[in-house]
Image 1 (spheres, rainbow, N blue to C red):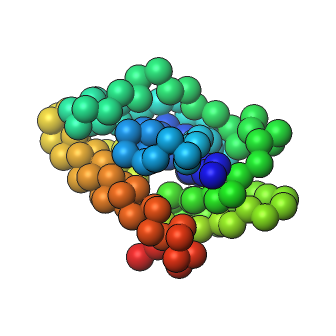
Image 2 (image 1 turned 60 degrees about the horizontal axis):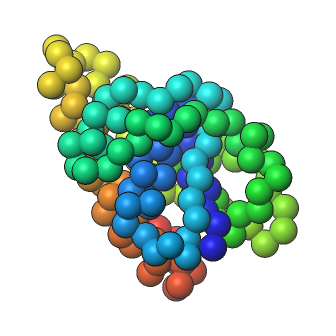
Image 3 (image 1 turned 90 degrees about the vertical axis):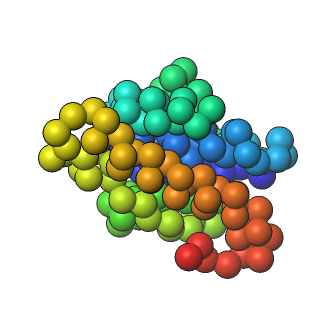
Length: 145
């Protein structure tokens, strides 16, 4: 099974979802992440994931167009903007949406990096909890909560 996590800039939420999926899901599920735009990997997302034992430091930010040769069984949009602008996928691709708040936006007013990381950690943990539900969601073919 091939799953793509799609976000606006492929810098934070979709990268976390890819990292958690590689860490938690069965090897029969292959995952990618991409964005509608390319913003580069967010260093605080890398740090928050590393704290949880998942290394995404070697991930690269990709445009969804860079994966147009790949067929996906599921595309899961992880932000509202990507959901609204989600391109059409051919074949039997199912598109699901599970929006998460944007850690960089939440942390914009943070006094320092430690305060900013609070937001990244919370969203990281919410994404982890969602990824743990992926097999059940896909088997039941229900929409995520």
